[in-house]
Image (tube, rainbow, N blue to C red; front, side, top):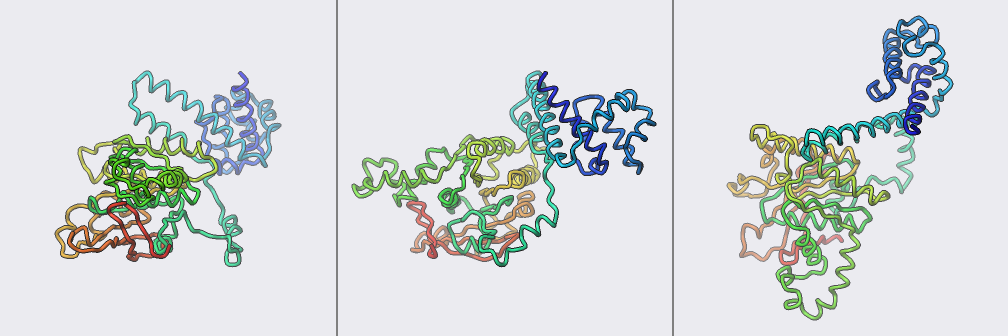
Length: 420
C-alpha cells in the first residue's frame, strides 16, 4: 500500500500544481493515460477541456462543471491544491511517469507470458515505454547561455570521441553523440580492422566501445585486437606457441594489458535485432554509468529486421538504418555500422566507391550522418607493393567530404596514421 500511496500523492501534487498554474497542462507530456487514479484521469480531462475552451480551471469553473461531484467536489479540489508547488512540477511529472512505466512493464510481462510473445516483440514493447521523454526540451536561451563564452573558452570543444586518424577527426569532428556513421566497402577490404582500430582508440580515450559482431566470434575479434596492437602476424596466432618468436612472446603480456585497457564489450550472437542491441547497450550504460559508449556493428545486413515486408530488402534495410539512427539519438551516443557494397563498383574502371553504390540500400544515405568508403589499390592488383588504404568521406552532415590515406597492414590488421 505504501507504493500506491506514494503514487497517489505524486498524482495529487501533479494535478494540484496544474490547478494552480493552468498553463502547465499545455506544456506537460503527461496524458490522462499516465494517471492511475480514475478520479485523477477524469479531473485531468476536465481541466484540459476548460483550458482548450479558453476558460480558467479554478474553483469557480470546476464547481459549475457537471462532473465535479463524481471526482470528489470542491473539497477534493482544495485538497489537491494543498499539494501544489510549481517549482517542483518537473519532479512531479517524472514521478507520475516513472510509476506509469513500472505499471506498464508489469502489464507487458503478464501479457507476454499469457500470449507467449517472442523476444523481439517483448523488447519492442519495452522500448515504447522506456524512451518516452519528459525532459526532451531545451530553450534557445539555455543553449545560448551555454555557448556565450565559446570563442574565448578553450574548454568549449565539440570534438567527439577520437577516430585515431587526425584528418578524419577534422573531417567529421570525431564520433559525435547522436550520430550514425556507415563504413561501407567490398568484402575483405579491411572493414573489420578499421572498426577495431576505432574501437581501440575510443576505448583508450575513456569511452566504452560496444561491439556487436554478428558474424565473427568474440574470440576471433580478441585475436585480431591482440594482433593489430602487438603487430603480430595473424597467421601466427593460429599456434602462438609454435610460431611467435621469443621477442614477440616477451611482448605478449604487455600487449594483453594494452588491449585490456580498451574496456571493449563484445556481443557476438548472430541475427540480433535493433531492439535487442538497444537492450544490451542499456545494460552496458548501467554497468558504466560515468562513461559514454560508442557502438560498433559488423554489419548492417546481418541485423535482423522486425518485419519482413514481403521480402523487400529495401524496406528491411530502411527499418534497420532508421532504428540505428534512433538508437544513436535516443541514447545520445555514436553508432558506427559496417556495410557491404554491391557488385556494381566492380564494373567500373575506377573502382573507388561512390554514393550511388549504396542508394538502393534502403534509406541508409538519408539516415547516416557520415558515410565513409574504404578503398585499397592492392585489393584489385595483388602484384603491387602498396599498403595504402583510402578512407573516402562521401558524406559528413556536419563536416567536410574528402579522401584520407592511411597505412594498412594486411598481415596484422594494424591501421597507421602518419600524423599520429
